[in-house]
Length: 114
Length: 113
Image (cartoon, rainbow over all chains, first blue to last red; front, side):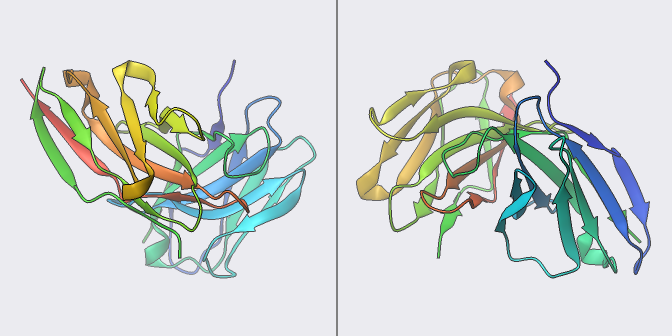
């Protein structure tokens, strides 16, 4: 079975630009979560979506937005990129929402902002 | 506020030695507890999880963890470390209510021959 897939693998942008990251969950999983992992830190929760609705939001500015599509895939959008947005962006899928649900992680998208 | 603390940033052990990675959480109720491992260039892989019941849980790759409510801890252990265990280890908690998931800052494990 295919795991969580993310695209692109790596991305280089300049300050002020916009970026879109994509995630396809495991088949049958209806929830997708996004995390930011800065080098040397643990992943920080950004968003969780379930059935196309936002179900959780971390402490990130409005420059960060996301959406989930009818096929449960998801996009994370970041506007007006800052140097501090350079990080590994992880997508995780689970069958449902709730803190007890095991999350399955993709390999991540490495974003570098110059 | 909810938080997860991993006091050890980096640990070095000899191959074959025992291992214990510490994790403490701060939460009003007993959260759902997880340990994940991240190898270079890889995503996070679940090692084990605790929801309720027996406080000693077994995971994959020979890992186990013990939940101690009185100490708000969920330490990860392995009796004999293999060189392939070198990786970054993250403790995480899932909120009993709401949909937040919190990670610690991680412990980097080096295994020497």
